[in-house]
Image (cartoon, rainbow, N blue to C red; front, top):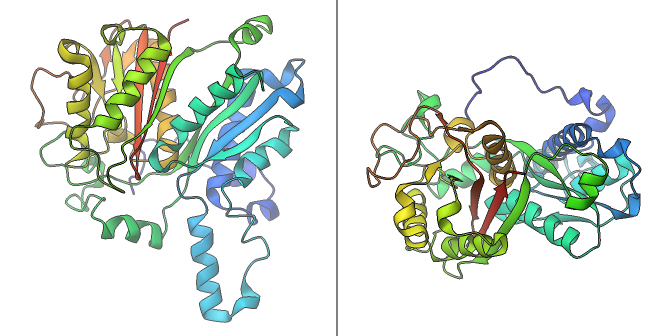
Length: 367
């Protein structure tokens, strides 16, 4: 776990639900409710004259209610089956996250959960775009949420040597994508949610439009349950598909928010995939990993990083790759080490890859 640098904000569950309701659900559901509420308020969509039957919710989680499962198994083993909470099952199911948001705001359109390991959040955004493009919904709340910081969650990732252990005494420098001393990722938790709308619908209601989702790509490696393809073949095809749906060339991408988890193999494979697809432009495009600052949010990573990408478009500031002192990659590749970079940009690409060989790439463009 990595504590944030700022103490200005402390998450208070009772800001979002009464105490008795908080106890009925896993933290990933609560995070998702909170992020959805913030996104909806910011969008102003609920104040517009919307059709609830065309307002959808597509939210997911990579793991779901693992802490809730752990607590109830502990209670079962210690005190027997009668000590299991009656809210155990509905408080752990991944689809209860979108259902809670649907019920909270009376949204009666397409409501579903997305599960795609660490690509979940990005996959939810891509699926939401498809739902809108198909004409099923005008607006969709989309994203991912995760809270797997419990003994079994940490032990599970640790036993497959996915987590960093070299920097246990200095955790703030443990997440270091592309650095020669990287040895695994740092688990984070939280949620990232966006509100997607049909472009004409959004303009008509006078919505504040942060960016346009112009392209997305979803692929599978069909290679290994945890390891990426050595040439990043599936990730490359996801990026290629996103470029094709956006109808832009690789040379038009200004910034890539990489999956970059700080694992010895995965970081380098992603750069190989980028080089294979982008060719000479791989040495001109800026690439960074925001996991260096917030850790790996697993199922929420893709949507949180999509938001980073959108804000980079908005402000013309590329987030840095922290703790990158000695890169293992070609020195001519700009990995935005240590310090943010100011640059006018028009198109950004966000990558998210997950266990099972699932890949999602999103392209956002300035409006």
